[in-house]
Image 1 (cartoon, rainbow, N blue to C red):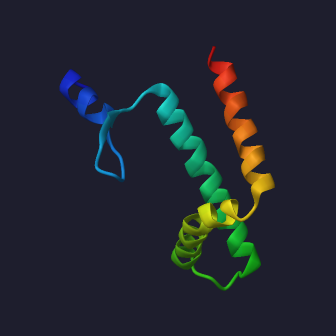
Image 2 (image 1 turned 90 degrees about the vertical axis):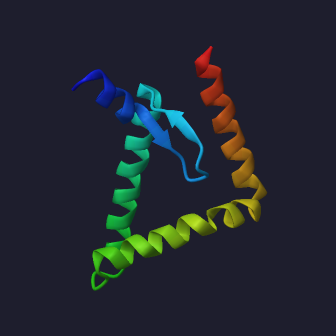
Length: 93
């Protein structure tokens, strides 16, 4: 791949229209998130096997959209997530 194409491939445009550069860590995290999302979609399809794939994907998107509200109504869950965040940051050093 020519250098110019490599550079273009390394640019990421985020949902808020900011532009960043893909790092191996960002690529790995994105790959893991996509893999887990696909597994969750598969799980939703087991709950209702008559759902079409695009319907299951749309449902999962709606579930993801509601997660912040769900978390905010569960202080214990927020506390656990904050501990996980601290553990991840501690591994950086």
